[in-house]
Length: 380
Image (cartoon, rainbow, N blue to C red; front, side, top):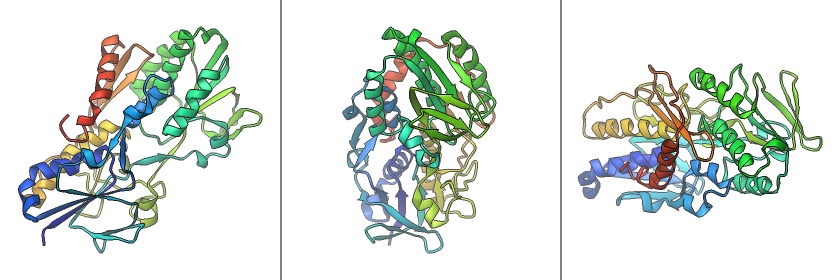
C-alpha cells in the first residue's frame, strides 16, 4: 500500500501543499505509491480578501470563487464533507458522513471563522465583512447611509491583520467620494493601547488617522452591544453610540479541532515555530490560521508556510529528513483609501515598516486580486 497524505481543509494553504506534492511526486502518484486526499466541506474555493471590495460594490461576488476541484492537480482525491473527528493516535480522520481516512501524514488546514456570537448583541447590532452574506448586507447598509456615527470595532484574534485599518481608510475615502464625509463621525476601536498589534504599523497609522479625522479609541475590549439603543460597551467601561456598526469579531478555529482535542479551547493547534509540525508529533503538519503561532493569520502566511511544508513533506515521503525551516515571513498589502495602498512585510526577526502609500501599490494589489487563482495552484 502506498503512503497516504490527508489534507483537512481546502483553503489556500491546504491547496498549495496538495498541488505541490502532486507535482513533486507525480510518478509515485501515478504508480499508486502515494495517495493524496483533501477533505473539505466546500465545493467552491473562495478568495476572502475580495470581500473588502464587495461592500463598496467594487467587486462582484461571482469573481471571488472557483470550483475547488478545478484548482487541484490530477490524482488528488477531493472529498466534499466535514471532518468530524481527528484521531492522531490511530492516525485517521473521520467525516460527518461516516467515512474514515487513515493517514501516514496529515495536514491540518482548517482555518478560522468569525465568531460574533461570542459578544452579546454583536450579531444583531453590527455588520461584518468577513463573510459573503455579511459583506452584501453591509453593502446595502452603506448605500442607504446618509450620515451619522460609524464605528469600526475590532476583536482579537482575527484573520487578515490589516483588514480593520483597510476598511477604515476605505470608508473615509468612500464617504468623501459621495460627499458625506462632513456628515460622518468615524471611530475605530482596538483592544490594546495602540491602533494595531504590530507596533510599527500602529505608529504609522496614528498620523494617517489624524490626517483623515478618524478617531481611534484604544483599550476598548468589546463587552456587549445594545442593538436597540445602538450603543456598544467595553469591558473597560467605555460606552460608544453608533448609527452604523462594522465589526471585526473575534475568531475561533474549526470546531473539529476543538472537539478532537488536538488544539486549545480557541481551536488553535500547538505548532512548532520553524518546523510547522503539531507539537508532540512527527507526521502532523499545520498551516495558516490553524496554528497557534504568534504571527498574523493572513493568506500570505499560509502561502509561505505551505511552501515549506510541501518541500519537507515531499522529502519525508521519499525517505529524507526535510531541511527547510519557516522564518515567519508575512506580506500584506494595505489599502489606504480607494486609490492608494502601501504594504508591509516582516518575519520572526524583522519588524514591519510600511512604505509611503501610492497609486502604483494599489494597482499591484488589484492585479494580485485578479491573479490570485494561480496561488492555490502553486504557480504564483
